[in-house]
Length: 277
Image (cartoon, rainbow, N blue to C red):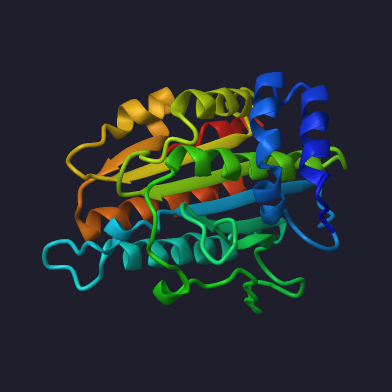
C-alpha cells in the first residue's frame, strides 16, 4: 500500500539511480500528496516488463464547446478517446504487463484530479478468448467541467507519478516503459507552475529513453502548442495542434492508441524509441 512518504522515497531513489536530477526532486517533493494518490495500491504486479499508460484530459469549462456539425462536444470526444486508448491496449499481446492510470487537469471533490490511480489494465484471467478489461470506463457525467487550465501543474504531478511508479518497478528488476498522453483545448493559464519547471522534469525523463509523452492541443486560436511543447522539453514529433474538428481529434486519438499498442509490444528499448505517431 502507498503511504505519505512513498513518493519522496522513490524520488530519492530515482536521484541515486541517476534517473532524476536534484532540481527535479526539489520540484516534485512538495507535490507528493497528489502524486501518491496516483500510485498503484495493494499487491504489486510481478513482471519482467511493465508499461505504464496514462491519459490526462482537460476538464475546463471550455471543453463543453461543440464543433460545427458535431453531435458531441470536445469533453465527450475526449472521454471517448480515453476509453479508446485503454480499450485498444486490452487487445495488445502485452496487455497483462500494462498498468493504466487516468486523470483530469482540474481536481474536484478532493480527488487530486485522479479518475483512477495506476492499476492493472486487465484482470489476471484475461486472454484473447476471454477478454477481461480492468480499467474504469469514463462517461462524460463522471467528470466535472470547472476551473482553468493548470496544464503545467498537472504535467508535473502526472509525470511525477509516472516517474515514481517507474522507479518502484525498476528497483525490483522490471524493465519499465511509459506512455503519457495529455489532451487540452488551451494553454496553461494557472500560474502555480511554468514551462521551465516542466522542462526540468521532462529533460530528466527523456534522457532515460523509456518515457514517451504526447500532447494534443485543440486549436483555440491563441495557443502556440508547438512552442509550448518545446518550452516544456517535449519531443516536437509528439506534440500536435489539432483543428477544432471532431473527426481530426478522433483521428489523432486513434493514432496515439495505435502507437501505444505498438510500444507495448516493442521487443526492446531501441524498438520503443523508434515508434512515432
